[in-house]
Image 1 (cartoon, rainbow, N blue to C red):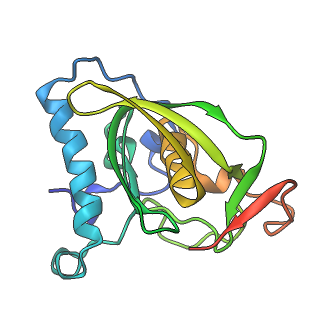
Image 2: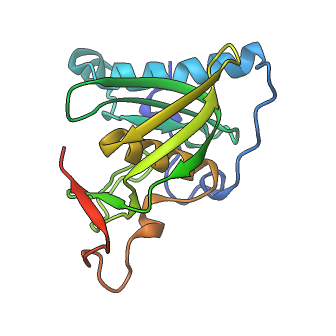
Image 3: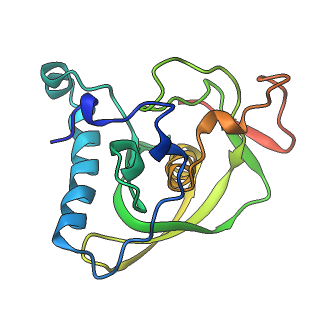
Length: 184
């Protein structure tokens, strides 16, 4: 089971590396790692388990955050209609996106970043993501709203990009052209 001590913090060199593709079909070890990512998210959202193990609640986690430089992510989040998006994917990539932008009105956070970093993080309002499940089957997801933002955040981790890299340094809360604010 992944705990907070397994999650590396901002400044660790693995967070700035471009992660390696996972060979498919996935090895048992890679399947185990992928399963542990989604398990952490589910546990972290269960108040009793989170309290017992001191887990910070998360809605997305990428393998580089546990110091495994491989292209694996997990997302466990509900959209505004309370539809659950619970996915653990190998080699996810954005294959198309909208022109329209979106951002979280409250800003983004990250399990690898211990302090709040205020500012708007411009993202695409809609994305189509392709990846592979734990059995190596192709999965294609059309996403919008919070799930789209979470997938973009986690895929950024696979490319060595942190959410605050997108924040306007001069004016963190500058309006973003052609963007819709997402409130949780």
